[in-house]
Image (tube, rainbow, N blue to C red; front, side, top):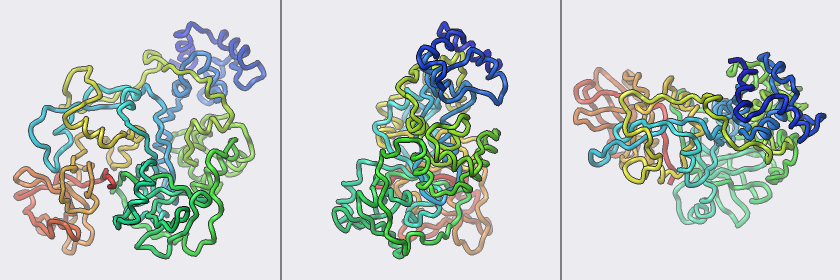
Length: 526
């Protein structure tokens, strides 16, 4: 079905014709308005390069009462890909991520508890406790979230975050724990990490409280990089780092200059909510992510290549022009590019553009006319009926979702890249939350690890400096997770200083075997 027929079919579900939609847009917005929908729209959208503007999309949403995100999807724009692209771009600075789920009617894979077979072991395949169930609409699953968190991606130049966090890690920020943890920090020597906004961007750091309105961004390993800031004027504490999703694929040690060291007195912090127009929002967002027009243009070329559409590219001069205008770009591709490059929430972008978001429709376009891809279940993991409840009060899943309080559904499109796997599935995830004495520091307070089961041969070496983290199955059926190397047919497992196991040796294939290499760790911060 071509695009014009698709639009015609959707309008038919509301008893509308394009001629009637054009008339209503004239009556509501005026014929000279940007929201006017022309009666020859079918002809305009027949070509792949022509499509309505964001104003006309909003008019279609208002007249049909169908959601704006659904109308954008009709023309090939999946807003839930914005956060995925934000994640994939390497950045020098730490950035806030758009964690919104835009398509509330999208199908998301979900799970059900398997029948209990006894106590939960310290380390075990997640499929031992959970099985794939009927996929659910996003709106159904979002009600499981008890509260909202902020999410940020750690920049490779955020030197104060290391070694507690790694470059490119995804961190969850609890906005409501800051005051409590800061007061505890005065009498507790355990490191507490906070996300702090200042005029030069965002920083994950330990904090030293000097006074009620003075703090020091501090790292015990990088004392020369610390910076004193005044709360309210030069800095704002956004929240405490609550959890980390760390990818171990392609990790490298990054030596960055201490940009904070010896820096002049920081300028005043921009007040939140002062970006009343688009040009102010774009400028402030670009300065927060710390990119020049030329750098942002290069990143836009990557986005255009990734999405196979050159309209996503923006030249440096174009990006500069956008910061002098108050109206959004004509091409929706450019709007999405700006949201990706500068880590802007799509709704925030539209509000800054002056669009009347109170007029957008609220109902989803039916699946019959806007097919949504339903995720397939993993073979051999089906359980329960076709109408399992997503709310599981007992068993494994219920307490887990309550403990974590929010499931970051916006990351669902990024799991392949984060885990370094082509086809991420439930069978790649292992529970490690019961291991009370882990032998690797990354596994302290960890809940899950993702394992690449296709990498079963650990490093062959005589002197083991930094072997990979592997999951090992011992002959008694228990699991061990830690740094592993192989020497002359012997698996050598080493623990970090202070771990319960100094060194362990197993005959490969006799006493133990490698299940795979750990590529991602999900852990909490106390």
